[in-house]
Length: 300
Ligand SMILES: Nc1nc2c(ncn2[C@@H]2O[C@H](COP(=O)(O)OP(=O)(O)OP(=O)(O)O)[C@@H](O)[C@H]2O)c(=O)[nH]1
Ligand SMILES: [Mg+2]
Image 1 (spheres, helix red, strand yellow):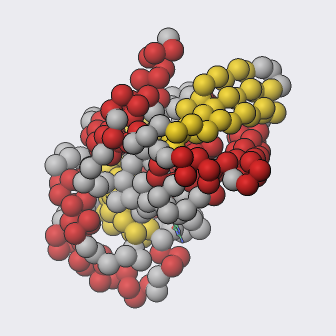
Image 2: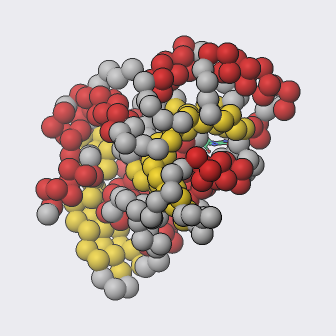
């Protein structure tokens, strides 16, 4: 059989499980995951290699009506991810009732011209008989090429999904070399892992007020030195992040370092700073700095 290859956008509402799915199919962590909505802020390619073909998944931020400069950038990221794709996967949280957010998501994908799959995710959490009404509901309002129940967490249904993706992709040569799993540089992965640990360690409005920028990334053969700043919007948030006697920041740093050592396969020296940048989410000039593609252009 001829080799298949192509780009598959993974879209859906915040918290549907898009990044979990991309990581599971790639077989490595390329995107961060937290229980909080609006974790992903940039589109990232996660590359799935096999003998039959190469699936380039594009993880995207959750679909929503943008209110801040950050959310507008996230919406732009989705629009760019949808350009020139071969396939689209709409990921839906099957444990949630169909609501206005799902209607909005359908209207968004309706504008895209390519075959579309509906992935009913988190089926590990629901009774099988609840699936059928959901499938019927979606079938009535939209014509999907395939509707596939999955659990990105347990892996249920993912073999079938992989097969179906390859089936629909066009014939073509691979876009990425066999050892590449993501298009994002390690420097960005480092910032994201730090943000993931900080998001997981904090509550309420703090996780969403966090941004991480790597100030220096020095690669040695055995050791990577990373100096990064975590931005928050208010003094109170800075206090929470640093914690009593610096305990919180230390814990975040340790967790991030351990995971980065595992992901990069090298020792990591990590130094974290915390700075207040009032209302950065409403400030386009700061939001732009969080776009790693633009950062790369600036560095080169
Ligand atoms: N039980 C269960 N939980 C899941 C599954 N898939 C994802 N989750 C959980 O759902 C939460 C959100 O997962 P993410 O992968 O970050 O979701 P996302 O769609 O990328 O979210 P945003 O980036 O915020 O748009 C996390 O707590 C995941 O562990 C699943 O199949 N089953
Ligand atoms: Mg995500």
